[in-house]
Amino acid sequence: MKENQLEDYCVYLHLITKKLNQYFQSQSPYIFCKEGCSKCCRHGEYPCSELEFSFLRIGYAALDLQTQKLIVSKVLKINEEKQKFKGDVFNYECPFLINDRCSVYNYRPLICRTFGLPYYDEENKIKVPFCVYEGLNYNQVYDMENHSISVDMYQKTGYAQEPLAFNVSLKFLITKVGKETMGLDFGEEKTILDWM
Image (tube, rainbow, N blue to C red):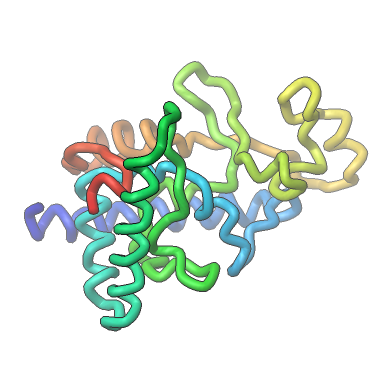
């Protein structure tokens, strides 16, 4: 990965993070994310582009040797589990999750930065984070039966801020914002595990 690409990616991340912080702040009544929760880090595939992984590696290199060794041992264990897996989609705990905290938080991929907010998918349908089903983000306004955010439930909360969805899908952030607007080359996309 070219060094100037990483510099441009840092500018991109600065802009995206600023916007995401505004989104999360505007939705604060519905957001239960907090340090140490880590439910989103315990069971996923964690898609990550080549550019994102190059940036993540900088964060990994800055870790102390003991933490690096722990991450490597987690990767080896996860790979063993993956070899024995017989299903369709292999989900695993992120190897960078150490003591319920992200060891590379400032270098984490986009999927980690956007998780927690409802977003529009490719068919313009609203998707909610899975933690809604665990009584967390947006649970007080999400109709489980109809699988949608409910206006009636929102009105009962008494919150001034209505629950909103945002254009924060990976496809939108990478293609529309990163590639088309900023000219970034994100490269190939794999899971974090496949990059390691």
